[in-house]
Length: 243
Image (tube, rainbow, N blue to C red; front, side, top):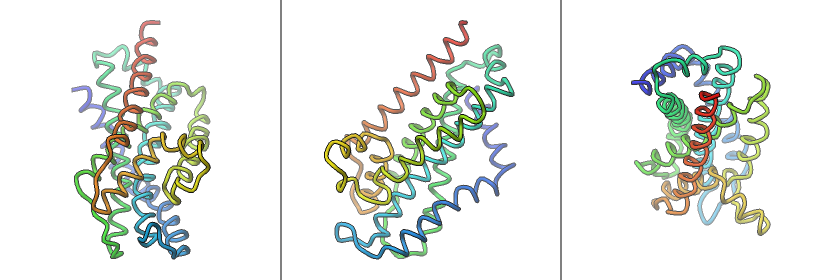
């Protein structure tokens, strides 16, 4: 019941700010598509560059949508509205509250990624979207929602949320197999980047869109981030409750 309550809150917020959320999810990805997609005509691995770029933009939109939906809202609720303190004294199980936040953030990320799919549908690229695509998007969203939740617990002020975006989301957006392949990166640095969740999400969505499927390694990386940062979130909130 607690999970449904949190999701209902997210749904109410989504309906209230529908146009703002939709425009925010569209502007940056569309600009990237125009600048990179129209400006670069070369092919990647024998395929048009758009076939490489669009799956990367979808993965990136899923990441930024999920992270943004959780990090800023939770920071405000915890620091100023004191909503976390109210949850702790309520009968709502804390694990349901956390899970609701994570699922809600992931769904917001999937919405952002879905917008890109719709906007690029008229472009005849031959890209394939199927159940694997949405599963990867959901797992990528959960991974970044748990990361955002953990960081929101560490935030000291409202201004920390934009800093997290600048330090984490922006570098990943450009480095993690979205606009350019990580294969051209120096050895060592390439391996480090490959262990980041967006790198694997971009690679697997791109593979699925070309008629392939996800990899065990990629799924394992996303699952590892989900488990590790989810566990950190649980530890933080339960330790706070017991203070």
